[in-house]
Length: 230
Ligand SMILES: [Zn+2]
Image 1 (cartoon, helix red, strand yellow):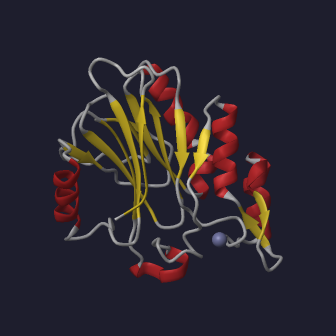
Image 2 (cartoon, rainbow, N blue to C red):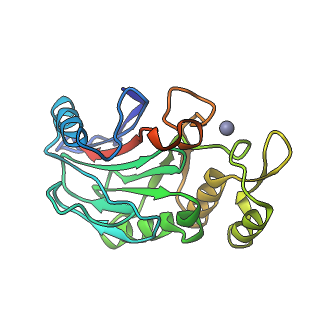
């Protein structure tokens, strides 16, 4: 169910036992929008002992929603932050870059969906700024599985346009054609924002543990990046 899961404890441990949980799902857990999604999320919340799961209507923008419960309406945004314990933030992708962020000490967590437009709009830095406005000072990030720069072929003009804004995205496919490395772009943006980032291994196109739009087309499921305060 999870391709990656990590618990971030504080050292020394706070008296309230606060921890941050970070997870990326695999293809065994499809989080694509549809009639089964509510049941899937309810089961996940029960399994993980969560009070709720807050997802987003992702629109390839840079808006950041501040949420304190998982109730409807679902915000139209590509990033979210919260300080609510037990509420998991969920970002869903199938080749775009899922990013989860946390400041365990301050008790602030965030998620972002960074596709090509999200990288151009620097959605991850907008998310870090919102977390800092809520009191975060030591933000860390995890860059989840996404289509890698050796696989994400784009027209040359598109590569030039994106790389003009975010030079780290400039890439070439393994077969020698223009490409974008969105993960490298996100990593550069986080570095510029002063946020250390861990990269979770796996290319969604090459690694069948993950959902991939480029491999599976419109029927592709969605993998999730989750973060919550426990
Ligand atoms: Zn790849």
